[in-house]
Image (cartoon, rainbow, N blue to C red):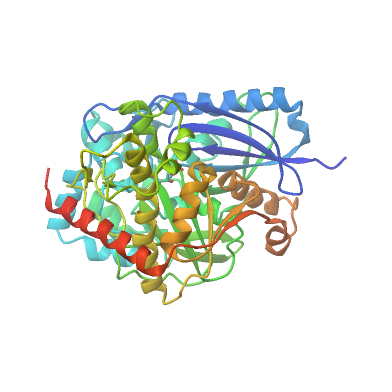
Length: 498
Ligand code: G3P
């Protein structure tokens, strides 16, 4: 009998999810588990790699129990992951030598400064499409090799392995049989030439990274390994799709044509525009990156990476205790007609695209005696939309394409107020799809294509359905006035150095 499902494992920054999809791309069951965020020093963020693995296995157990599905009914597994987060482990024992250093973490800033002083940045831009920033994996890896006793020597002897979270999961689920990654994850390491599609010897040399510790880079849709029964509930299931979470969301949103774009509002917010078979270099502070590789064909994307989006609402809830739950933010925001001149610039870990300023921190402007919690919450939600407008402006300039609509997903897009304000601020319709688990869906599609569960991208594009279309209603002069206020707020934030 034909197997009925694809299992997607979505390993994100604050939680892991396991989601089952059927042939129509509908969710047939899901489970989610949060795990600990470790903050050893201000600006540092780490995870326990073992806890990440456990959280993934626990969600699979829960999912199978709740959905009453057997792994025998799963045709393949797709993996998608928080990108850039860096793990180094012992090849013989599987033991990590240090915590996973998370993409948000700034602990390798000094290494970045050194690379800039040594003049490496132009090479980084040309080969990787990225820029020198603590966001990407390579300087996190350098930090581990510098700070863990004997790590450099052991890595040179081939005793230690490096991987992003996809590699870590596949290595463990396959019982150590495969040390691999896919092109989208490799493209975020700062060590990968996105044009020639290979590890770059000059960059490996500049960072003194031993080649022996790197995973083999494969396409985004192929069988990489099968799960080892001893590690995966007694089952041998092919792992057949891998992509970093933002690229997976672009795929799940069926943005297959140049000029199509999506925005995902998760912990951060990441807007990606498909640019076809060529990498478009950015002149406006964006990244060029690999969208995916299927067969021999490599597709590229322009990306605007915003470091803080959904986490500003988490901060209102957990830090300021202004909200009981994140979803209350919509009701608060709608209780006032405007933010009354209040602007919040949530630069908690500096500013990402298009500014790239790690030395600034968050700020709130325009407070008056009449400012209420409602204004504050509204300003926080609006900050996601303003940051996305900054990125979209840069993207249209880089790509030379005016966006006609934006497909949107991620937790905060469930917030109707934010979705409408986003559409108003961009002046283009924002489309919320019926399946909002777009990241997991993209990984499932990539895996399903590899094993013949779905035929091709046309079949997948036909499965995409809109849930709600938010069309712009705000007059252009009002939009421009509000946005000018935001630009002033950002400039003032950048003028205040911590
Ligand atoms: O580049 C970081 C990104 O992959 C994290 O995504 O959804 O965990 O915020 P998310």
